[in-house]
Image 1 (tube, rainbow, N blue to C red):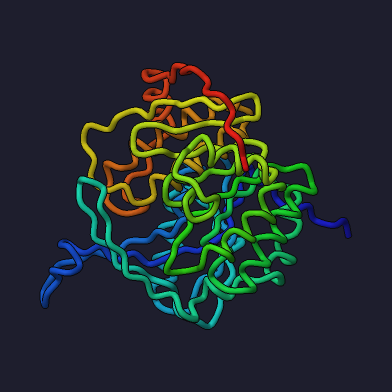
Image 2: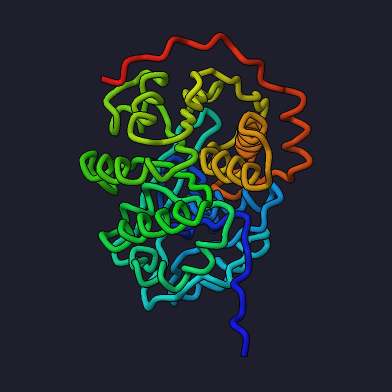
Length: 335
């Protein structure tokens, strides 16, 4: 009997999915009877939803729990256009977080991750997804996935090696979270995965200060490229992004959203959209323009997947705000 060929995906997203509980007030002011709503998020689900919306055939590589919330969680992912057939189950609860946000972008989080299903991700799962990984166009993964447990750290590296070795594209977002990991461990993972990446997306000052000792986006990009990343995108506030593709660094303006509600997941939306468009053949600058537009639109929603813009809307905003190349700054020293 002939061997069945694994399905091809434009984008695979490896990482954590979470139950999101959105509080209606600041967490420190929460009291008995404070209203809240349940939704589903996590950086992997946010990025996968964005990739699917951008037109890519997208699947989620994750481990979810055996509690009652797994059914609506996976149903929500499927509603967002993400193939969840590769998702594995574990006899553990799903991770969750409580979120409060305001229109100024200030956010508060409380996480419940200890012994979660997502933290059981390991090399064995990667082995079971080997055909998917070696046949995909691109992989998106993050430092959050790599910080959940020692096994998940090895899983992230193993997946990146498989995709890179097969000629696929790897996007990595360090997504540094001080409550989840320390700078030393995050820096080591960054150093090991950077040479495998086609796109490394980092935030400044948060990621940059913790991982490459700088609050300067240009220096951060240069230091990430010195680690081996081919292209680096550094978000520098809500209104601009620095793109360094090895020929020089250039600031690109982010389209302004006149009606911001919650910035949760905006970086993941950028990552998923940009990676999808790269996998579908867009030139780098076009893919990044689409990523910035989608991220800007996403902040009109509440929660990580509260607003996933359709690609028609994303493309229209990107076209209307076509980033003009600003003067390329001199390449800084990486010492």
